[in-house]
Image 1 (cartoon, helix red, strand yellow):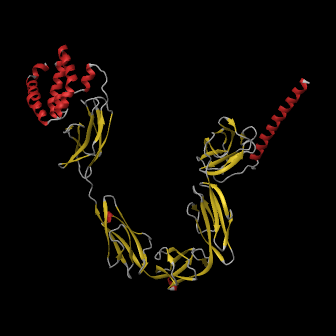
Image 2 (image 1 turned 180 degrees about the horizontal axis):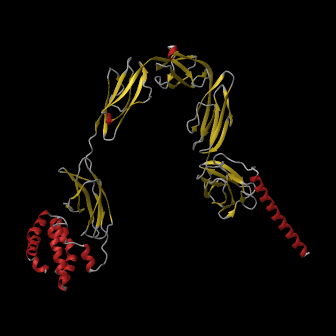
Length: 569
């Protein structure tokens, strides 16, 4: 018995391999024999095939649960889950779409956690998971109706439900003696409101679509004079219902130009002076007349020639007297438009507008667009946010443009938020648009500072906006680090800036003399511990600043400068 079962298994394996081999050879024969289809261009896209499991909070969903696939919010396919909690096995789940589009899935009306990117011809395993209580996708009601004289046959009249962005095919058919006029809806998008067969894209709300029909009335097209050209009913229907939009077109004969449209009854033209326009059909027969006249040449000119272009928008070059002519001025770089003039009396709608119209006189006319060189704008400066903020330093930034100046100078104004006066960095010369950065040092930790960019040209100083930053909390550090970050607080307060030349002398004496001895180093450490609150007190009073500067700091600096050769050596 055992050997018999083994033989049967071997036989089935051999049969399977043989079947696969024959299928492979058959495919090769089909390709070699030209049976496989060929395409002149790119092959048509193939559906993206999905399969996998569907689970609710980790457990397989019930057999028959609906699985839906949406591409860019439009439903493209649906299938049901089998007894094993799987989908896409039988039947195969194929989803149409466009390359790169997002495919979203709903299981039992609940959006799945997983989505996919659509690819032509791809076969993909995708296990879908949903959760209890998740909101299902919303479907909206579409109510379709019609007025007297016809009906909607696709998808029909009545109430339907669709997802938002679903594209619905519509077809309206008129009864004898009536004609389709238009589609209307308070929301959503039609492919063509005036076409009986069109599409409607569903909005994210309930909506009613109405097909309008009407009794048809004849339309007659006329030309005045007859030799001047042709008046054309574009759709060539010859009759339209009341309210229908009718497209008409005038074609002037050689030597003539179109003037305007009139009708033998009141009609609403979209543009009575345009060769191609539309009007709304009245509730009666109507004769529409295209008026033509002898065409006169139009010459367009620019002053100066280098200033730009003067353009005849319709590019006809000749128009009938009374015709409305559209013109446009395009200034060249560095120029601005001024106004329009003509070599004879014409009526411009707006002689100072780059795009305007005028009424053609009964003679040839030259229309000139006048330009003038535009003055370059003045320089500009913009304060940029500070970066690299530490306990005792920060980088401040600006951007600037040269405008009408060949050179400018830039600097920063800075101060503590509580200080009444600013201190300044050194003016730096610039000759091209760009950016500028300064590193501010000798700042106080945990202190809010203000700064602004300044630019000077031709004796004028302009400023950017004021920005703020706050230094970080001071960290524990050695003496060398401390000295690298901090400046002379009291002297800085007295002079109002850490960049004063006198402070450079004090720093040099500190580094060359005081820090070379134990006693001097201890003095420096004590100074940096005690001086910040004293400096804050001094900085708030102009009188104290003057007294400290004149009675204390200046004399010390004078002595250090006088004895510099001694202590430096």
